Length: 85
Image (cartoon, rainbow, N blue to C red; front, side):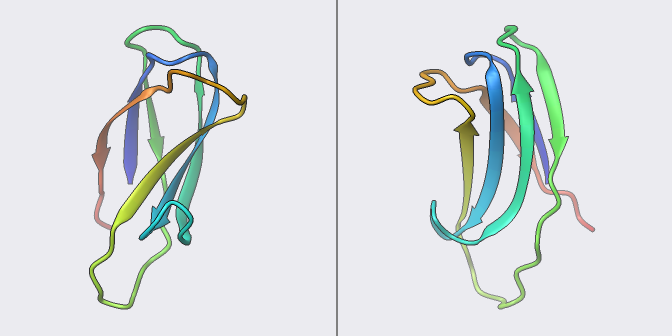
Protein backbone atom coordinates (compact mmCIF):
# COMPACT_ATOMS: atom_id res chain seq x y z
CA UNK A 1 0.00 0.00 0.00
CA UNK A 2 1.34 3.43 -0.89
CA UNK A 3 0.46 6.46 1.24
CA UNK A 4 0.95 10.07 0.21
CA UNK A 5 0.70 12.77 2.85
CA UNK A 6 0.63 16.52 2.39
CA UNK A 7 1.82 18.52 5.36
CA UNK A 8 -0.83 20.70 6.94
CA UNK A 9 -0.56 19.48 10.49
CA UNK A 10 1.64 20.37 13.41
CA UNK A 11 5.28 19.32 13.30
CA UNK A 12 5.72 15.90 14.86
CA UNK A 13 6.46 12.27 14.12
CA UNK A 14 3.44 10.14 13.32
CA UNK A 15 2.86 6.42 13.08
CA UNK A 16 0.30 5.12 10.63
CA UNK A 17 -1.43 1.82 11.27
CA UNK A 18 -3.74 -0.10 8.97
CA UNK A 19 -6.14 -2.18 11.08
CA UNK A 20 -8.68 -4.85 10.21
CA UNK A 21 -12.38 -4.25 10.91
CA UNK A 22 -12.04 -1.70 13.76
CA UNK A 23 -9.75 0.87 15.38
CA UNK A 24 -8.57 -1.87 17.74
CA UNK A 25 -8.48 -4.68 15.16
CA UNK A 26 -5.46 -6.68 14.06
CA UNK A 27 -2.62 -4.55 12.66
CA UNK A 28 -2.10 -5.39 8.99
CA UNK A 29 0.72 -2.89 8.43
CA UNK A 30 2.52 0.01 10.04
CA UNK A 31 4.86 2.83 9.02
CA UNK A 32 6.17 6.16 10.35
CA UNK A 33 6.19 9.63 8.84
CA UNK A 34 7.90 12.81 9.98
CA UNK A 35 5.90 15.98 9.45
CA UNK A 36 7.78 19.28 9.61
CA UNK A 37 4.59 21.35 9.07
CA UNK A 38 5.70 22.82 5.74
CA UNK A 39 2.50 23.50 3.79
CA UNK A 40 2.03 21.26 0.74
CA UNK A 41 5.21 19.26 1.30
CA UNK A 42 4.60 15.75 0.02
CA UNK A 43 5.88 12.57 1.70
CA UNK A 44 5.45 9.09 0.24
CA UNK A 45 5.52 5.93 2.31
CA UNK A 46 5.12 2.32 1.24
CA UNK A 47 3.47 -0.02 3.70
CA UNK A 48 3.76 -3.81 3.47
CA UNK A 49 0.56 -5.57 4.49
CA UNK A 50 -0.03 -8.91 6.15
CA UNK A 51 -2.32 -11.05 4.00
CA UNK A 52 -5.92 -11.71 5.03
CA UNK A 53 -6.84 -15.15 3.73
CA UNK A 54 -10.36 -15.83 5.03
CA UNK A 55 -11.98 -14.63 1.75
CA UNK A 56 -14.44 -12.46 3.72
CA UNK A 57 -15.26 -8.82 3.10
CA UNK A 58 -13.53 -6.53 5.64
CA UNK A 59 -13.31 -2.87 6.60
CA UNK A 60 -9.90 -1.23 6.78
CA UNK A 61 -9.12 1.49 9.32
CA UNK A 62 -6.20 3.90 8.86
CA UNK A 63 -5.04 5.36 12.17
CA UNK A 64 -2.68 8.35 12.31
CA UNK A 65 -1.07 8.55 15.75
CA UNK A 66 1.12 11.48 16.85
CA UNK A 67 4.13 10.97 19.14
CA UNK A 68 3.12 14.07 21.09
CA UNK A 69 -0.24 14.15 22.76
CA UNK A 70 -2.84 16.90 22.19
CA UNK A 71 -1.90 17.50 18.55
CA UNK A 72 -4.80 19.43 17.05
CA UNK A 73 -4.04 19.25 13.32
CA UNK A 74 -2.81 16.03 11.81
CA UNK A 75 -1.23 15.78 8.34
CA UNK A 76 -3.58 15.36 5.41
CA UNK A 77 -3.39 11.85 3.98
CA UNK A 78 -4.18 11.45 0.29
CA UNK A 79 -4.25 9.37 -1.84
CA UNK A 80 -4.09 5.79 -0.61
CA UNK A 81 -3.10 3.39 -3.36
CA UNK A 82 -3.09 -0.41 -3.20
CA UNK A 83 -0.33 -1.92 -5.32
CA UNK A 84 -0.76 -5.53 -6.48
CA UNK A 85 1.94 -7.99 -5.48
